Image (tube, rainbow, N blue to C red; front, side, top):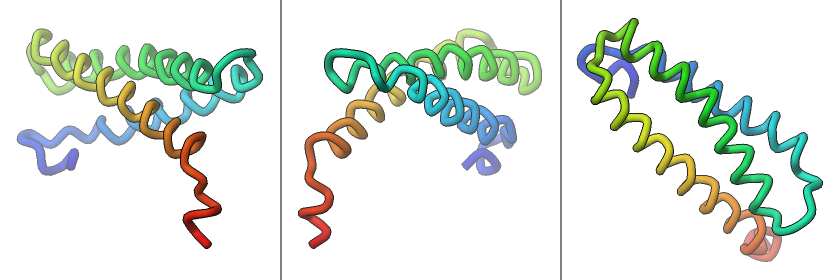
Length: 103
């Protein structure tokens, strides 16, 4: 997808890598929190989003020459996608009995 954009944006791949790496790293530190299991998941994704959003802003504005208002819209969309993803993953991991489905 990154290379089908006009102009191609090769920085998307590293941005997604940053999100995944930091989400996992933060979650490893927070997974034993008391309370609902979704809390450390959401905190981890939000922390990773903060790291990723800095990278996205710098690469899109300064390296891809996108206007800052457009990048702000992209960042809002990324935030909503990240939150929707963590909620969907939580549902799949904690609510659906995967072992039962696979039998």
